[in-house]
Length: 211
Ligand code: TMP
Image (cartoon, rainbow, N blue to C red; front, side, top):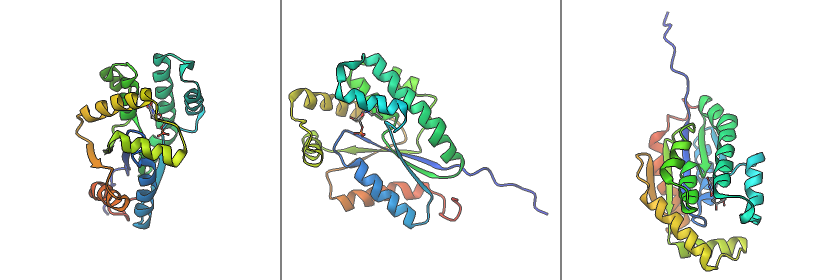
């Protein structure tokens, strides 16, 4: 009798990163659909989460001066700890394919742009599972701002915000980690989706092996 047991299933963690307005959330929906149609068990999730820390973070957007940059970093990390424990680790252990809209590279870029040290931010995120793939959406800042303004009706035109996003984009551009793949997010929507799928599919087990 063959008593060898197969190793426990381990899912995949794929994160979507980039500045605001590059189409990450739209693409995450399209890619989740395409993977589900191929029979993969997909968990679509995002940060900041809908949990208590994520809600506090969203409340802060309305009143940015409401906390120091150190407190802001602490909130994003606390939110991530909850997310890792409640969603990411269990889904990975169950062999799911996780698509996560923003993860710790966003903390590096945004809180880095807010004056915190990028190396320290990454070190504080060592508790978080390293992604199998981080898809970094790249597009001109003007395009991102145009999309945000058009889709959400948000007034993002003031110089301070453009300057802030420019700093964020510079940090994203400088990140050099083996699991990062950069894509041109200014391409047509179907082209971007197909590019992303071409990056993800080779990393996945056959759908029947994923449960
Ligand atoms: P969203 O618009 O993708 O929901 O993200 C909300 C904002 O939160 C976005 O401007 C990026 C920012 N953010 C950080 O500043 N640090 C982080 O760690 C994460 C996950 C998001």
